[in-house]
Amino acid sequence: MTFDFLPVIQPDDHPGHVHQHAPDPEHPHDHDHPTGLDALPQRTNVLPLAPMHLKGGWHPAPVHSFTVPLWFRGVYDEQESARERAVIFDRSHLGRFYVTGERAAEVLARVLATDARRLAPGTIKRAVACRDDGTILDIPTLCYLDEGRWLVISGPRAQVRLRADVEAAVRPGDDVEVRDRLGESVLLSVQGPDSARLLEGVVGPTIPGAVPRGEAHEMLLGGYRALVAHHGEVGEDGYLFLVSPEVGEHLWEQAVASQ
Image (cartoon, rainbow, N blue to C red; front, side):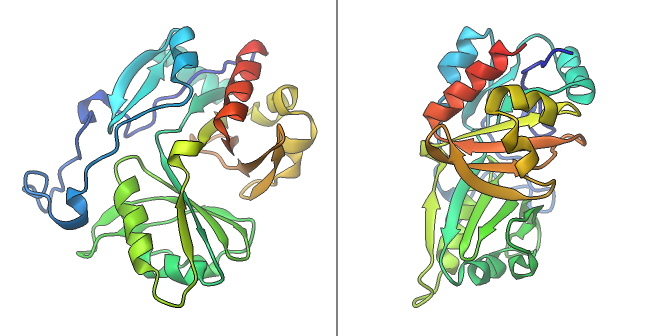
C-alpha cells in the first residue's frame, strides 16, 4: 500500500469563508462593527512549509488570513486515501500556545466551558470556549502535557481572541505564562487507518507505539523537543506533530519520499 501524503480539506476550510469572519446568526451586524477583542487585527501569515507545498504542486487558497494548500492531486483521491490508507496535511494555520504554571489549569477553567482541571496528565481532548453571551467562540484542542504545562490548539478564526482571553484570565499571583508558538513551530497531522504503520518508516518504529490513543507527549525528535499526539481528526486513526520548522520540513520530505 502506498502512503498518500496529501492535505485534506477540513469542514471550515471552504473558499466561501476566505479572509472573513463568519457572521453570528444571532448578531448579524457584529461583523460590520466589531468591538473590543473582536476588533483586534487578524494575523496574516505564510506557512513555514509554503515553499515545499509550492514545489509539490499545491492548489492554494486564502483561509482566515493564511494561504494554505487545499489540495494537490484532487479532492476525491485525497479523501479516499484518508479513509483507506493515510494522508498528511499541514495544519500550521491553527493557533497554538502554551499555558504553563502551577495554576495553569485554573486559568484555563476561567475561560473554557470545559473544566480543564478534570483532565488527567497526558490527555488530549477537545474543549469548548464561549463568548460572554454564551455563544461558542471556538472548539480548541487541549493537551495536558504535565503538571502545570498545557498546549492549546485553536481554530484559525479565534486564535488571537482565545489567546487574549487566556492572558486576560491570569490574575496577579497566579505565576502563569502564556506563550504563543504560532511563528516558531509547524503543526502536521497524519490521518488514516494506516497512520501508525506507515509512520514507522518516517519517524521510526518506536514513536507511533509510544503514544496511546487519546494521549499527547513531548519527546525529542530530530534533536528538538516535539509534541506527538495520538489523535484522530477525520474519524480515523491519526497523529499530530508539533515540531520546529526544521524538523517539520524533514518530516514532510521523508513522508513524501516514502510514497
